[in-house]
Length: 203
Image 1: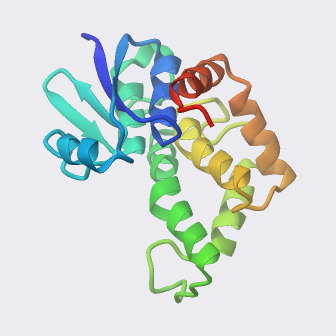
Image 2 (image 1 turned 90 degrees about the horizontal axis):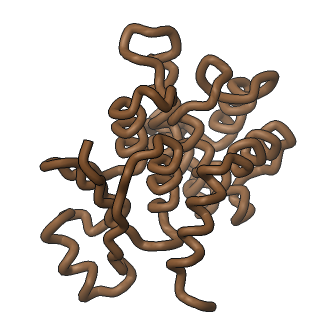
């Protein structure tokens, strides 16, 4: 595999993609994109029409959506052992949790933050109470989401949980806190955070 290009803006979901790159140990190059600047964002539309980061260039394919990037990297680098292969125990669970963050947890959390109460049975993400109960059940008594060993699902979903708790948008249940602490103590996470901080503008 040739060097990846990660279109990158600090203090965004790019840090999750960067963390995943560090976990798999793949060579990569950061391509700075200031999506907060309208001119740069407009120029970036030629690469990604959604004008959102992260975006990962892998050979002749562009991959967007953070969870998709994490899953792609896990499958592309099986030696890192961050995803059960197709047909192996835990593969279905991996896919479920990979997309739980963006498809269920984030919209439910913003419904809660905005005070919007949609019927839980009429929308794809249910409601916040169900999200918390589901996560608590999945993590209570085990360290990680899939086969109780660290995987790409922990990168994707753990990042979302860490973000929400950091901004007091998620209850700091001891089960959740200890889970995120396990993730953020990993060397790859620490390195990605240091790189992210080094690219951030001074306060």
